[in-house]
Image 1 (cartoon, rainbow, N blue to C red):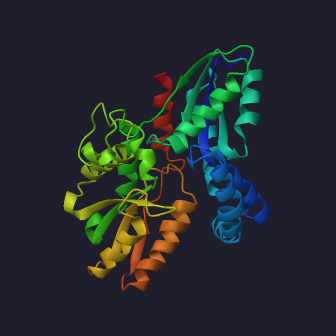
Image 2 (spheres, rainbow, N blue to C red):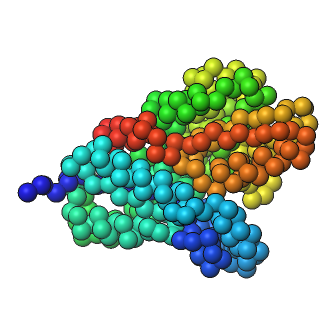
Length: 339
């Protein structure tokens, strides 16, 4: 009789609507945007802004975009997540149980952690699927998971992997995928990361100085090792170096902004600027996203491709994400085994 696994691994991804229908997209956006780590303003103001302004005015268009994204099997981020879960379980063997949860919607952290509680693991390893730490992603996932676990009668040993922006396996996986594209055939290369409000980036510093005062674009120090901007630039430097892309050939940029006070340069504006300079073809990496999703497949692969064509260019080529690539599975395995 096989023994029960002693260690549970919890993979946490951001989330997805259950369907691309308006009702499910409404539920997803409402839960997501009401997270105080995502929109970090006073409670009442956030409720008014999200529930009465942002979601009602965005839900119809968002539903339309999700319909473009959806496949016959469902949401790509969930499909890849399930595949990664199963492949990682196979790699880790019988001593490990592996689960996938979404921070928002389903499979929910409540549901998945209830199942893990019943499994009576001696140790739980939480792996947010966000390589670069941000309070709005990793921080939120860990806070929610810890809130749930804190209510258990028996709390096992809990390990957390808070970021792995510089992990050699993660970097090498992106390099290997990037080798399929000859960057010399493109006029410029973009490394596009999900944007964040500048105020959230600045909050990681205890000295009261903003990110701009910490040389975040050029080095990692003890002060900025959890600065989202700093680690995004660090990830980029390592991937670019591995692919032999010279510094003048690439730009780090940030997408999906909600307003002007977010990290710059904005990815869509960089696309337009490059087109105005005469660039015809752009190659775009998205290292913050370990699975292709709305932000990569639609925003970069479709909307930015249309954008460059509107300004005289020819093509925005998205470099696919890690998805369920064997090197990504091996990276996760190694991260888990180090715990």
